[in-house]
Figure (cartoon, rainbow, N blue to C red):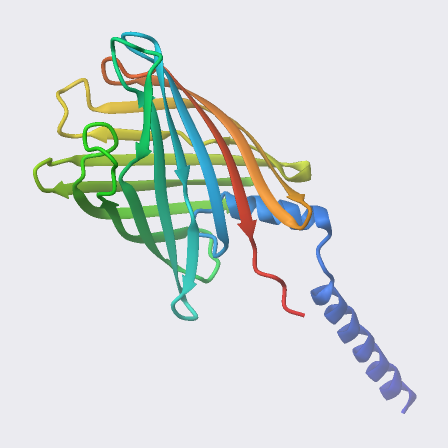
Length: 274
C-alpha cells in the first residue's frame, strides 16, 4: 500500500513538472530571438509592415541617384488547419533624376504595385516553402518614369530552412506583362541570416533581376553585399531594423554601381493564449 502511494505521488510530481515546463513563458531575450528568426522567414504567419528604402548611387552620365521607398504590408490568412495564405504587397514610391541637363532636379511618384500570394503549409518542417501567383498592378504615376502602366502576372516560389542560428532561402518569380509594352521580368533573391545574441543578426539578401527583353549584356543586375540588423521594442511595439550595402557587379550600361538598403519593420506577432 505504501509503495502504491509513493508511486502515485511520483506520478503526480512528474506530471506537474512536465506541465510547468510546457507552460513556462519564454524570457524576453528568447522572445526577441524567436521574433528575429520570424522576421527572416517570408512565410511567417505574422502581420508586419516593413518600410524598405533602397538608394542606388552612380547613375551615368551625371553620377545621380535613384531612391525607391517600398511600403510592404504582409497579411497572413489561415485557409485551413494545414494551409496559410501569405499576402505580400509592395507599394513603391520612386524618386529619380528628372533631367540629364539638370542633374539636381528630380521627380517623385508612385510606381507599379506588385502583389504576391504564397500558399504555404502551416505545419513546421525542415523545408519551409510556398508558391502562388505574382501580379503587377499598373498604378504608376507616369509610364515614362514610374512603371510600364501594364498589367502583369507570373509564378512565384519561396523556399527556406532554419538550422540552429542560420536562416537561409530563396525567392523566385517571373512576370509577363500584356499590352502595348511587353515586359518579361525575372527576380531571384537569396537570403542568408546568422543570428547573434540579443536579437542581432547579420544578413545578405541581394535582389538579382533580369529584363529578358533587353539586349544581350544589358539584361542583368547582380549585386553582392550584406548588412546587420536587430529586433527590439519601442514601448510595447516590436520593431525590426537593418541596414545593408551592395555593389552591382553586373549591371546595364549607365546603371548605378552601389545600393544602400535601410529597413524599418513594424511587427505584430500573435499574442500567446492564456
